[in-house]
Image 1: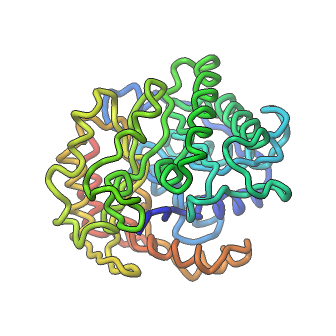
Image 2: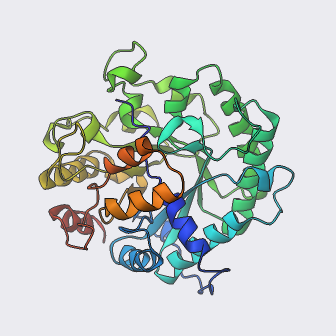
Image 3: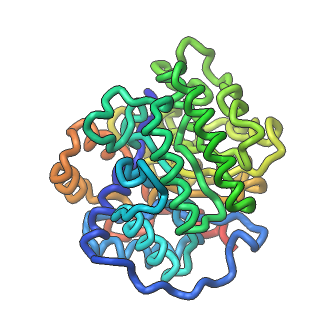
Length: 369
């Protein structure tokens, strides 16, 4: 199995925030966690239910258990086709998330995501008439660059990702991957020209990078990492960042090898980060899961690579109310396949959807000073 699996929850969150009107009042910024010299811990800002009240409560709760949120947003292609400066409801929605984060003592890491988080073989939200688009298409390249520059100017993020789990796209479309690399380098240079201090990266799906999904290994040997897909971005890669959902590759958290993440320590001397990940606390589709597996997963990352992590994002603080999400996704026209994929992550949270903590939450909190 290939983990193209990722949240569609961000799109729901933005839709709900849009109903709240214009930008929210902006709080005064405090000292940055990124200047503290310690790992920043955080989550995706995905609420347990698809409602504005749940969103507001989620940001409050995230402030109790984290330092940052990771906002990962698809591109408003038509809004940014000609310029970084056009009006866009997408930008207002993103700014509202940043303000909610700051109101609750959280900073924002931003990832630009051109692809569908639930199916990384396709772009997300392309306009009509862009059928067959790839990263060599002039319109795709202009919108991607312009949207990224607008995000840079509005949010001034310390850490800015320019794609998520890009190795899964490289596996699916090896002929188009060089087009993405050239677009990445062009965008990296534009970001650095405006903001040299911004740390730029893409994320790599760790299980897929290690060929642990038979259908996604393309004939390569299991556990032999495709380092060439990472190193293709050098030297324009300020830190190496992974996602990891080992419940899709191992029978339990205890089965995660003691050296599973450690190859990162010797392959690069650059800072490391985890941009998303988690372990299900109950069986999900074909995958096993129990509360102890979450504890073992957290300890595996902590014991193996925590000393090098700039930030560590766990996917969910709280589980989803899947009935609520399914209803909202159907209203947006999501396919049943996407709903079923999202359900696999419904129990990855460190709390039940009603807020009841699982054992792993105490472990997570113990890692933070």
